[in-house]
Length: 223
Image (cartoon, rainbow, N blue to C red; front, side, top):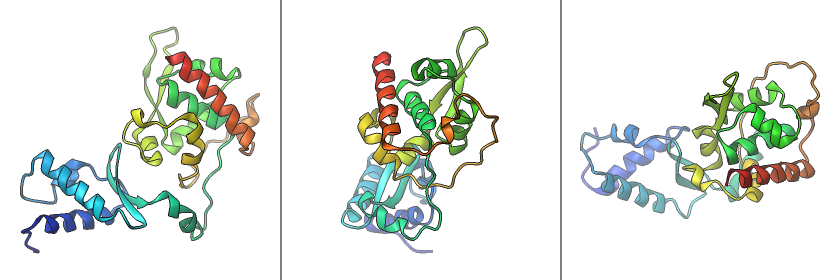
């Protein structure tokens, strides 16, 4: 086994482990790499140094909600996309509106979302977001029927490159950040046609603007 003597030796091991996985690695997982026990300050120094080592490259080391990961820098993503055989899914106006409301006013019930949107929310919209791993049920409101409370997940933060909800960007930046998220479309259960059939329509700039207006309203009501 390779003998480790200098900080650079430990950084190379961290680098190899992080490059070998596509999923973020928690600090607890990284600590399993070594027999030595380091304090938090030493770990911070090693990871910050490794991040600086890659600062002038097309890939960067970032800290996300669920751990540390190497990922392509945003300015190079357009070139990487040319190699992909599958297009990233395009979500409808109804789906994007619902996601924005949950993100900026969580936790919320389906009824809360309907009050803000002004239309009924099809169960298939929530299934789409749950299938994508962006929202989850986090509890139930103490009210008649005990409606489910929805909130965004750590995977949602990871896909946006964020560590916490405190880093959630201004509403006007959401569209651009979501364009960087590339994943296979979620498996969706077929839903019966409803009055909210707009969820299957293509997403347009007008739709995005409508989502932003509604999410802005939700954010203001929360304050």
